[in-house]
Length: 517
Image 1 (tube, rainbow, N blue to C red):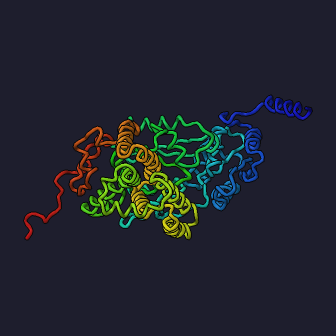
Image 2: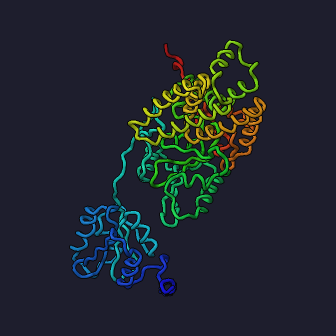
């Protein structure tokens, strides 16, 4: 009881102590500024306060975080020139800003909040005696990963570079591809404690101003402790968070981001993650891969049709098998039906339970293969599928046709280029099997109708999810069904790129120059 009373009393005394707000401005009292910063960074052993004298006369201190700042540059560009300054006490902040500090990026800070933001970003802060402002030096330096090809979005033809966890590297990759000053990058801070840097990227004149404002408003509404990955933001800005379908495009490829920016979309980059978000998203944009536009248009069209077919197979094949075996045996050719009946004569489960067991096992193997180290993950998933499938058939738990159906379904799901869209299909596959096992093909049709109705109600930042099929936009259908040759893709999508409709001059069909022999 005494411990509780003591705790309450000490807590009350702690709240009564006067505290300085981070929004307060710096004062001309050098010791007071130093005291406030030391109190804010109390028990932070990695925060270094390095006091020194300018020319042996004027007091100053440089504050930085060990491991985030370039110590060699601090010694060479800051401490050396200032400590050797002959002017000493007469040196002003303006003179230091213009003449003494040789760092390329220097910024004035006037509040404690500015100091905390710069120090936390790795930029050392200089404070001076009898000055109510300081200087932030762009000397951040930390370990970072080199630019590599994204593992989940590899291509046979196209750029091999992908985003990293460093924001400066990611924005530079975009600037390398778009040299125009119309490429705009706006910066925000999200997260009460993490203060994560978020960049809004768009091309001025192509992106709709209403879309840009909506992206800003949704990001500014986020009020949470920390944002560590783009998935945090994705869930907070979706139009319908309860839908299994992703309403934001997620990619690690700069060329994919640039291609969408040129169509009038907006990208969101987050510091600390290589995953960029693109809005608005549609169902058909999630089914398109970057390589569709790098191969010749006939090959791209054929692969796109194959992908649409596998999309349908991934969703419906197990449920169609369950419906045919349970209710509609007359739809199966007699010879095949006899073979399937022979393989199922020793199976103790109905087709629905059998299919659910095999699908759950396959999904567990796929998830285990993704979580294991790369050297053994692929081998475990492949060998495990073969061994378990063969063992299930031998033990009489599953039939051979079902093992083949589950295998084809798994292969078809891998053809979906976006992982988030593939997961939505994997989730919906199970209720579709339940409907097929209860109502047969009628249940399958009811499930398809429910999914289509749901997709028709979805929007991504105001754009209908099934654009350009629903609502029907004849001018854009050709971009969905086929991959037109580049000399025919003269216009941008109507609902995202209508600010500047024409992307190139018409009449550029290749051929020999007239008048040549």
